[in-house]
Image (cartoon, rainbow, N blue to C red; front, side, top):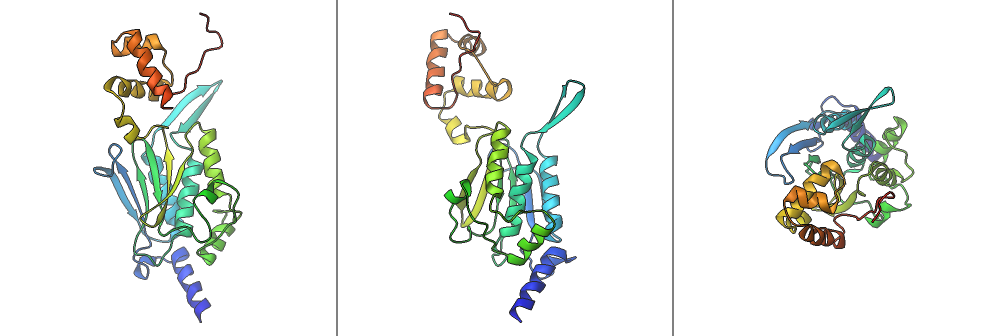
Length: 260
């Protein structure tokens, strides 16, 4: 009888026309915030329906609220999102598949200027830890029947490699390693656009903050360029860049063709 009930619950969540009739909390809530704090909405949607559709709807919401760059390479037009869509899709899939459906809360996707946060519902299944997610680990399904269905439709692999792939996709994309953490009793995955956080940025002086904004676009700057951009002496530029390098905000690189 218990198995039949579990099967019915999983079927309702996976294929039901209105699962929220029985599981009011089984929704995915997505929002695009202005700036870097969850204060002012630019766009927000709540996706009900079955959890298979929720996964696809949430991914499409992210695509609508991040930038798509295009460039011509050779004779072909190459498009590139701000974040690797594979990492976004895997993070959302994991949050929906592994959430604790007994908890009265929603899966959340929060998009900021500098990051995307994917909030699950409930902590990691024991005995997994946050550190385990960054190395080889077993696949532990909180929702066995949902996991099996997600496996059959090729949403997940059931090898415990999902978080490893998220890390790999971000690093290959030139982005910082994603952050895995537990907040308010739930697993949160943060995909970052920049290596410097808003809190770290606030510790910099006005000149340094202006240069960081320049680096977000142009990726590099010399001491003389710094001085010209800010309107300061090269000595000040040298000191500012030295502090940024020491604090690992920027990395100093010498061009191969550089000559004294």
